[in-house]
Length: 410
Length: 152
Image 1: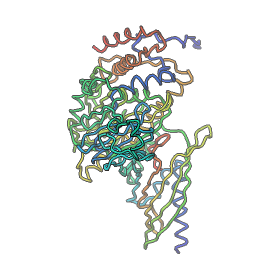
Image 2: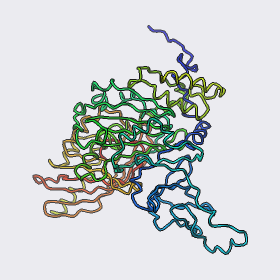
Image 3: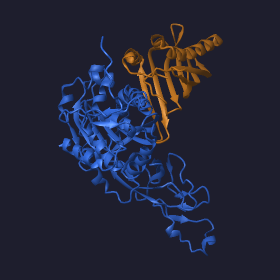
Image 4: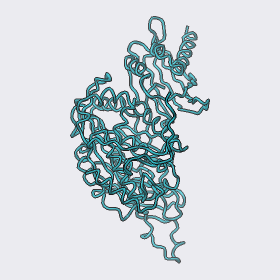
């Protein structure tokens, strides 16, 4: 009869510091607050696609690091962003998730008005301000830095952040390779999951998790190309997995060999992960983009978009939607499994039942190597100023953690 | 005759929810005619578009139910409450509009509202029996607690 072997479960695993995580990085409220400021408050964040703003005056109201932002298309067709707050007394300017303000923005409270460049164009009964010398020209909306690449609209709250191109670095070429079509969003849905945002990021990033999905086990994972590709790791925590081919017939699904997204092979799949929260996943004919709005340590609003090519015939669009829904979407086969998995992780972490997580797989950057996750957590540690394996240690430990991972990435 | 038909259809619509709740999937499929079709749609305010979330013919529904045990799935029980609002007969066909709510009850017995929406059903008579030729589900709830590939 096997004897119970006691082990000190409170101690970290006997692994290099880069190869495991202290799960308090997922559950600690203080760390969550720091992430909001140091990651979501100053990284470039993907907030929408330009096809969501087709006409002059179209806007999307979004949230970045808890701040309400309105993204809108100007008369010159340039996409700009502003804090969604009146310069006068702070009332919300737009109150729907999307709409059109081509005639300008009017505050509901005291009827101050703004143009699409954020300039203040009207103050109700301005004579009341004549004695104090208030100048309308100085009362424009607070702008938020905005850049568009490949139809993806990014914003950052950090006025000093490097340009988007510098932030994306080598990952940009991959976006340009695969998102050069004139795309449009045909699907958007969100879910508030009871889990930490990084656990869903991990789920998107970790190819090893494909064992969760019967669809993946019987299609992609059984194709010879599955283990022949490699992760490409880029500075700032971005990573791309090279394209592989999926054997859709293994699950009784149709092949995807027509009307391909540019750069995609028949039955091909590619995954592009942009720090901190973006996954662009293309399965030959259709694009999926995941983004996240962290609401609390154990609450995350995950947003999913599906994209096809603008101008698709009705028949081709129906095909793309069918391909999208076979795997993805709220009624797809894989999403419920992902949500169940990451929610179960967080439950165990929040109560202390899971103290450390292992990200130690090394397979020469082949798909089930955890190197891309280690790269993500290297960047996380650099930005938050904490070691992911020991987040409450002295901060001097962080550079050592980062340096070790840099060696591994080579 | 029409009052009997009206009652038959009302019972079928109510039964469609109960069969899903009880995982009686083959009986659920039998509610559909040979060329029956199931469509799940929702409107996105964010992109101002109607979206198709599921579009399945009878054979595809059967595939989905066959593979269902292979998936990791939500262990909660669903309970449909359906109200038939309107039945309009047109010869051997009927258009039926219903409103539904679905509750989700977890293993601890905690129930919560899962989703609300409407059914827009097209029935036809096949061998003197009413069959679903098309079920169009218009889902109002888009932020689902736990998503599911099962029809609603």
